[in-house]
Length: 238
Length: 238
DNA sequence: CGTGAACTTGAGATTTCTCAAGCGGGGTGG
DNA sequence: CCACCCCGCTTGAGAAATCTCAAGTTCACG
Image (cartoon, rainbow over all chains, first blue to last red; front, side, top):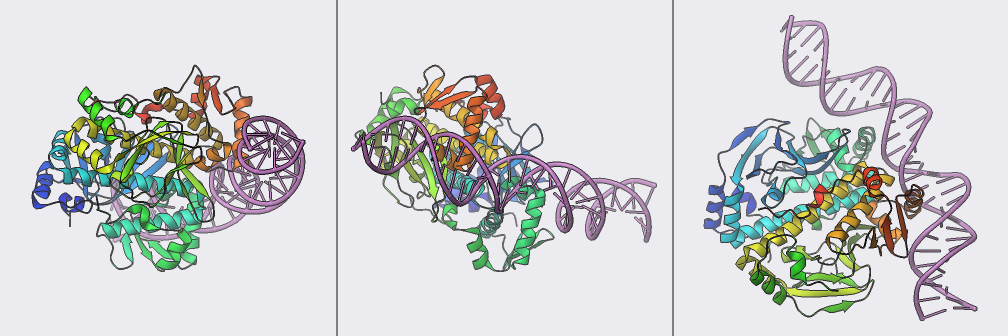
């Protein structure tokens, strides 16, 4: 079910039919990518922007000595390198699963934004929400314990996948390994593993076979200090 | 020397005279604000955007129990609540020093962006660079030791203040207290204090009387793992 | 000259890390 | 079809970074 990108973009602003059509036309053919494939390499200028249509990806910066910081996880409907419209890429994007992507020429998107304010507005909101998520991760890494931090990330991922239509009941796909979680939270793999066990022991989640189940949302959200305001879901008023 | 905002914005894209004039006209009278004044409160919708013309400010989120995460420091020339053009504010902005600000109605700015692509481009770049800085802070909080992290922040602040024209020789104004540094880096005040002493002992900096001096830039940058690419200074190609 | 905020110091407590090793399942080549 | 192997997960134990608490000092400002 690769949702069309225009449909995802319409979650960020009111798009009329002409807007949606123009957006769809901007993107080229759907391309299949393998798990582990690099969608965007740090430093490359590139002439296109990439929409993720199916599967999950993550954005990261890897230092010389191998330390890696993951900055974000991407769900279907995300434009993973929006930044490239105006800046060079300072981080890379890698597929977590196999999936499908489509690309649009930068020039076309820029023209679209100039001609269609609603499209520009949607892209602005998409970009600003991503920045809001970065800030919330900073709160986690700066102020929260490992337990709270992991719980918070699980809440965030579940909530975002829900908005992207990937949730079934209390379950969502969860392809990230414990190493991915560690690198996104600034924790060691060993510690992440122990905290996940604690979350399971406390009856808050199960996490296996690349699937996350939330067993007790109220208690998990409380333990996570999770307040979804920062995700600005459904916030479309101008 | 409150630089005019249009001049600062022109660091982000090529603006012609008409662009600059239109930007200047969008902003109302210059207003003086005291140190500690709140420029923007979390949650308020607001109908204007605020440009910082003189002084420094910081953006932060404060949790119920008093823990506070600082997300960014702002220099003259920054639009501190650009986010407000499209979303509600999920954090607050407070003055670090006394200073001067000017406000522009959201509507006027939105019209300006629609009518003048170069202005829109500049604002996009401003916003995306802010997000790039957030990501780099995540790298610091997730992967770097306290020593490296503090050194990195000092490099960043110095470099950004240089771009804002606030540097004299090897010195720049530095109004943040050790508590501000701590809250931006996710460290305790005590530890921040000890690491600052180590940086002084190592002959890398002096920091007193609200002024930072860089004694040995090459060694400091090396200790900080500082690579200014992420600041995208002077990157204006479309 | 008094006062408070910012800075500094000491010492013990805690979280989290590192190193090292073992386990388990799924995919692949023989 | 089976065996092997690698990757991801798990466990134990000691080490390190960083925190908390508590107290004292300095300096700018009223």
